[in-house]
Length: 398
Ligand code: FEO
Image 1 (cartoon, rainbow, N blue to C red):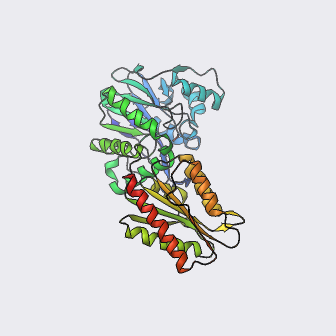
Image 2: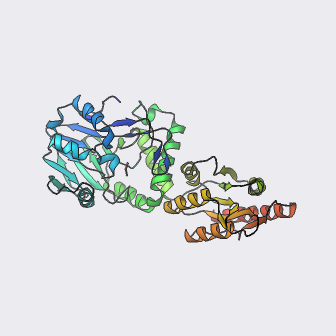
Image 3: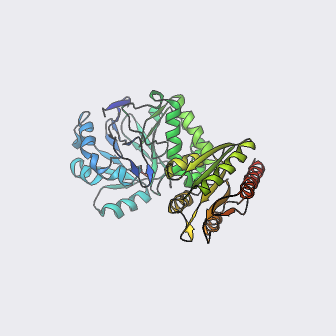
């Protein structure tokens, strides 16, 4: 990656990770970036670092602007290791005068690195740091994505350095959102939101209100992953976050399933066919061939999910259990649910899926359809009844 000046004397100096394909269960099929920003003013400040393996890239990029030892301040907007993994080595080289972090960030830094002699400076929302011609205002953003997270806002540049928020896991030589295909990029931004931030949607709603109340002007949003949003793109990503964090959805139903010997798949097909007659967009997502994080991206704006699994050894199939664990952790809301599946002799899968759904506090539109071995026409009609019940429940959501 080359260094670019994103505003006068503000530089993007982070690293591109073209090869990462898994981020804690999230399929990062396009890689990612670990963005870090450098402001060269009367005082020189570095905003976040990079994953430890990319420390040399960061130092090389900083070195094109300034001798790293001349940096005065390091701002830790977020302690997670993709942004602070190289911090100990950077601190040894830079020997910063001050290390700015939130109160929760201070605690997290101590818990991660066990260094109580670093020059911590704890800041809270509204605190400012004067660099000379530019002033940094700190905004705490707890749970976006960890308790320690915060934004750094530079009023003179209308620049919001937003840490994890508004990121995308995209590795690219392009640096700005307007340089990429808008559909591809918004899909990646949605995937990032669905798989990382859905669970924090109430916090995001509160944050958007707080930022609006602060009346700050923004014409550039520089996240710690992916490309930078500038000009009208800032409004587009802010509007998308408002939409997603309100759990707003489309007339879309997902049929998510896995089948051992195709009986459950035949049921899935009957359900999908009937759903489409109800005027809903239907997506069939076989867990064998769709990654859980791609399915979560579809979940983001779906109104209903119908989960199907054959019974294996008195339980649902392992990939369905995997998906339900992942789904539960992200706590989506405002969905209608139902379950189905075939079995050979005992048939517990539907019961266990229903229990999992009830544990997530999502409503069941139907008690579920279980079929012994291969479905008959009578069984297909039960599947169609389930589909009609889901369509009716979706219409009540509207
Ligand atoms: Fe990109 Fe929460 O770290």
